[in-house]
Amino acid sequence: KYFQPERRPAVVTGASSGIGAATALALAAAGHPVALGARRTDKCDEVAARVREAGGEAVVHALDVTDDASVRTFAEKVTADLGDVEVVISNAGAVGPGTIHEVETERFARELDLNITGAHRLVRAFVPGMVERRRGDVVFVSSDVAVRARPFMSSYAAGKWGLEGLAHAMQMELEGTGVRASIVRPGPTWSEMGSDWDVDAAAFVLDQWVRFGQARHPHFLKPAAIADAIATVVGVPRGVHLSLVEVNPEAPL
Ligand code: NDP
Image (cartoon, rainbow, N blue to C red; front, side, top):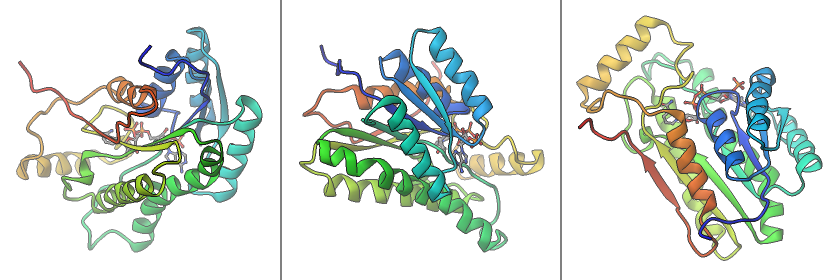
């Protein structure tokens, strides 16, 4: 059997919507007991109910990845519920629009804290145990913005470039430990991301994508496509490492 058959408890952050919710469903369908974390636990509960209806195992705990204590408490509760965590999907993230010299430094720092330091908090909470047990998968959900910066979302571009830097360094540090750190890099995907932007800002940013040649394929991916890629990355057997997977929409026929 190509995919790993063992029971491997998995954590998904940002599981209340979009890619995270779809990933919880995909991992559960692949046999992982899943722990869903986000600030909106009511939305996570709805996703967990769908997991259970499909015959899977799911637990929900509140999680704010910008808060050390929240991440620590989440890790303790998940381990008590599901046992040692073997798979961590660092997916929570957000993007705000703005011109670099007009974005307040406080907001810039807050977005970096969510998109980079939030991932580091998860690593601190779960990876020491994985290294000790000599097995585990950590997947960082990046963005194509990490390699093709888009204008008017500079803190997000900086965050995802930084996140990939963290992941590449970690891959080298973990060599030979049995713990795989991987990057999944989605292209534009329909989700709740950007739904808090005002309509004018969203229209302006989309116009700029076109101006800079970044909307060659105006159709977006579905969250399930990214979720399938993530499930594949964590499912390949030991001895194989899908270290970087970029998911793009196929050009229309
Ligand atoms: P959504 O806005 O639908 O999901 C973002 C998730 O992050 C939500 O579940 C939200 O939950 C969670 N989140 C935000 N802040 C925190 C926090 N402080 N602590 C814990 N969870 C938090 O967007 P997507 O599904 O699109 O985004 C998921 C990931 O995919 C992000 O990292 C994003 O950068 C990346 N991505 C998205 C692309 C796209 O086009 N949509 C393209 C490339 C990458 P809650 O509010 O309940 O806390």
